[in-house]
Length: 191
Ligand SMILES: Cc1cc2nc3c(=O)[nH]c(=O)nc-3n(C[C@H](O)[C@H](O)[C@H](O)COP(=O)(O)O)c2cc1C
Image 1 (cartoon, rainbow, N blue to C red):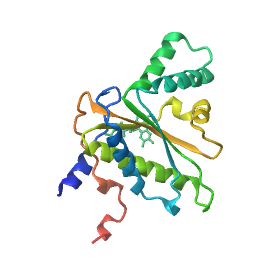
Image 2 (cartoon, rainbow, N blue to C red):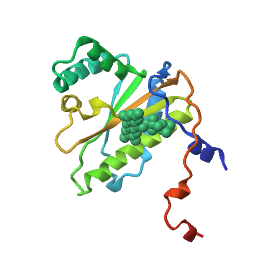
Image 3 (cartoon, rainbow, N blue to C red):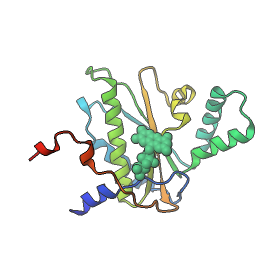
Image 4 (tube, rainbow, N blue to C red):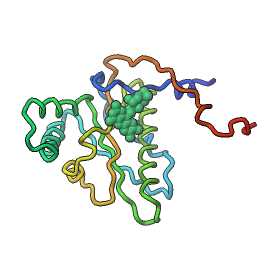
């Protein structure tokens, strides 16, 4: 088994809450995000959109998330608000990822969302290969129309998730992954 296959078989996400500084540098972040540009993409529509939050603009994320949470839960108390919002800063780089619907080729939106998520998969692999911690999460903010509006999303677009990037505060334990055979039909017919 070559090193790349071993790497793919052993990849693990960072544990949410255990991602710290240092963050990838700007140049490294571009290298990571660029890895998504070679993802399979039906029709070459490039529906992926990314907005980067880091300590320079975390205030923007916190302000919009506070408004968004009030929209969901108008009577929320200060403590709960504080707790909810602080989780968004669980990593020094937070990339909001969505699919901007492309209509020029009649390619169904689920395929466009699939392309975006495949891009993120490649970005996770790239970040991990560089030694950075990465995890892809949704959470309440992912489904909030106030936040979608802030990103400039319009009807038909779909939010996909948040890619959290930084350094492992604690290495996640290696995982026993399931054997793939159990998910394959007609495996005996391959050879
Ligand atoms: C689109 C998408 C959204 C996800 N959202 C969450 C989430 O909100 N919370 C969560 O605990 N895991 C979520 N996950 C799973 C994590 O990214 C991660 O795969 C999981 O923690 C297991 O770690 P592993 O990748 O090392 O197996 C999501 C995965 C995908 C593909």
